Length: 559
Image (cartoon, rainbow, N blue to C red; front, side, top):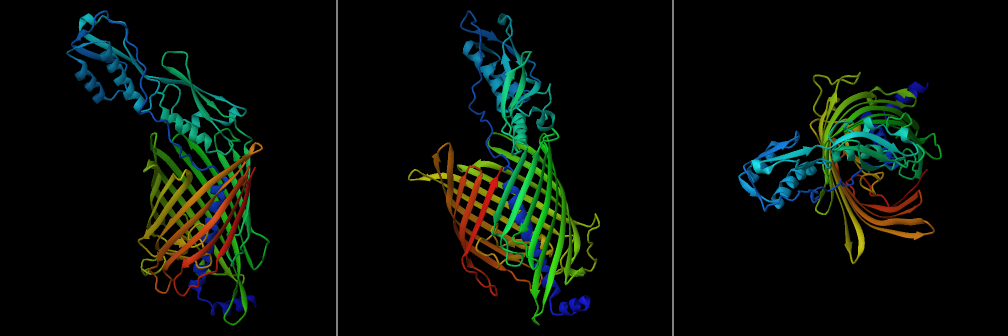
């Protein structure tokens, strides 16, 4: 009987439209999960590294007894990692001259500075005992090496130096390698590691000391907000519990649960997710698994109602590697392999047209750098749908306007943040551009989404998704703080303007632009934060209806 009712109801429903709506709900759930997970974990460090450009090498040359010595040739010993062009410049510039103390100090400083500029801060050039009357200047270089690592802190076993530092004992000491290791340690919420370099037992050797006054390795982040939609419930609660390096491998494991509150069988959503990451020097391996569920009761043209439900399971493995870093910049390569399996039901009956498994790979190049007095970041990625892992395979005669499982798309993200002052009042400007261009018609889970708190604020129900699209979010904020009684009450006031556009290849699927404006405030006290905002859509395309002003909140606490 139920099956017959579902079949009769299906005749009143556009199956493709229902599929798009279900995938839109799933995309919104994934976006809210991303907000939860990013809020719970410590953001990747964008702090600049040590600026070595103005470091002046300390050199010492003994008195020569005469104003200068005639030098016919220069010989450099022990400089295995001195660039050949630097060695040639030194030999050319200082051979065939009468060199005094000043010139000798200059040649030592030039060699030492070449090492320091590349991060080898403990390498030094010096003059060994010699008779300069021979006409040959001998320069010795002691290339500074790592004698070993030591961890000082209440949980010294929680840091495994071999896992976070790219260099091992015996390798040349490079400050950028050490900064990478500290960043890997401090990606854990329980770590506050700082670096100290102490003399080793032999000339040129150093002991790298990690001072980590860490807190307990278990962290809890909880929040409640009204970021949801009418279809699955406006109010939701979430909690993320994370465990930092409990195995002593610098690993991080977290579990996140988000659900509609209070539970409503007709309009409900929930998602459970797990994350695991472990570092290997300049590389980080990440594993993710999530399962989301939703229930949305639909009203049919006949007036009858039917419950639409779905379950989506997403799994992924990713490898990120830092390929370049200096005092102001960092560049990373990343690769990710993901599968996403969706099961949809209408009135308890399985909907094959709205159920599928997709598999796809994502490779990207990302980085950030200091620019124009602020910080710029960018990412360029390529995503390709694949037919392995039991995923859906496209038919050979699949029409161009039909969704493709073996899709191809380019994604780009560019951002800029800058602090400045007006009338001695500190302000922060932030702009973030995101875009996507697909070579094929996409399923909803791969389309570009605009609308919602993480996209165009003010357009919550008027959400659009498309094969191609872009989004520009701009925000100007005024930070403030009020000290008192050993704690600080602070926050910010902000205004924002967002605009986005999407385009679809399939006929009859809505395309268009959205824009919205927001004013809000964030209050923080100890480990509690409250965000309040009012957002209004400024433009929505026909036939969508512009919504009234939305009032949103998010209350969070971290323990």
